[in-house]
Image 1 (cartoon, rainbow, N blue to C red):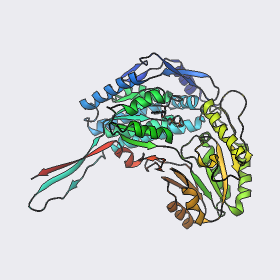
Image 2 (image 1 turned 135 degrees about the horizontal axis):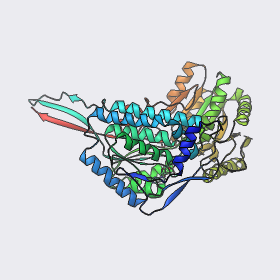
Image 3 (image 1 turned 90 degrees about the vertical axis):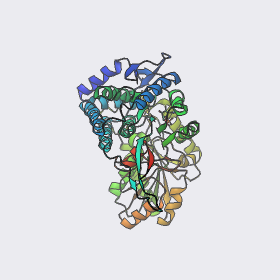
Image 4 (image 1 turned 120 degrees about the vertical axis):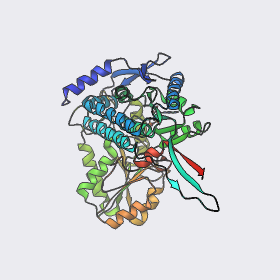
Length: 494
Ligand code: ADP
């Protein structure tokens, strides 16, 4: 293990401490007294316990968030003060980056280098939105005429109490994107991390208090989705939900939010296609396409899970992909040699293995992988299927594991039909050295993110989100903060 000792020691000390949820500026137990075991997916060991918050705790958090919003302790602060406090928050997180990264790795299983990167990216996202506190503008409108003169303008106001529901696959980064944009907009926030990986959210809550985010403005409620998450979704005093997770749960939120017409931002699933043309730079394209699905053990909403390879290079590409997959190093995220960590849980691994079984019984050719690693932890081998067909479940469903299907395509004329034959529209990739072909493909595919000669890179300055059943709205860029703002038009007759 090459982990920096101090980060690991601090993380294990933190894990051993009793954990409370942050409600109204205090760390508290669930009112029921119940807890959730937090498991290290690389070992299967219980590493901590967090409160199992439910409706009673959500009610308390919403009361606190609403009171803070109504009193204006945050939204009425001068924009520069809000920005300073958010920036101070990130300074505290960064000062403890080793500890934070170790917590993320122990909690989620991702390689430590990925966790370090996630902390840096999360921090820079909060800072980006801190800078936006001073860039929330309305506009004026020249509407005079017909004998009436007006001074008319629009203003942006925070939407109110925002519930931020995050998934387990990128716990810290998603928490930062949502918290940074919600708080910069002036909202009060209740963060509900996934029950499988709640720890960095609780640690960042401590730094939030220390940084001076006023009580009630930032709350963290840990708990199961069907208890704490569902209570937030149906709560009449929550104005907005920003959710990242599965399309199935996204649809339940749409229904639950209907009663009080909550605003919804939904970042949902995907089954993203990648096209590898015969003119691509194979030495770059093949490893990039492989990591486009295998990164984070395939537990990425925009994973490039459907690979289409041009006919004449298909056999060669499949065999090189298989060689790559066989060489990928699996292991504990704390080992610096590890490229791929475990899946998040036994439940998730058996879900993925059921897909492997369905691929085999549907007649697809298993090229490589398709098995679990014996021993502790929830590891499975990177898996590639060839000779699949569009009707197979492994080609249609989001698997959320390291499983790639590789099919053939003929020419650029086939791309739109293949790519868009899915209810999803989150991401797509194209590998080619022909610039015109790349732009044509980017134009044809109905998806929120297109990657050319790379895959899965995102940046906070650009809108991230999906077409069709991959979601509603966008995070990142100005769109990200706009999702937490209401617009008001003011007409003054002169
Ligand atoms: P995944 O498939 O990535 O586990 P989920 O959609 O199940 O995604 O979970 C993402 C987040 O949504 C988690 O924080 C989870 O607790 C929460 N969640 C799950 N079910 C519900 C629900 N019925 N209502 C609200 N939140 C939920």
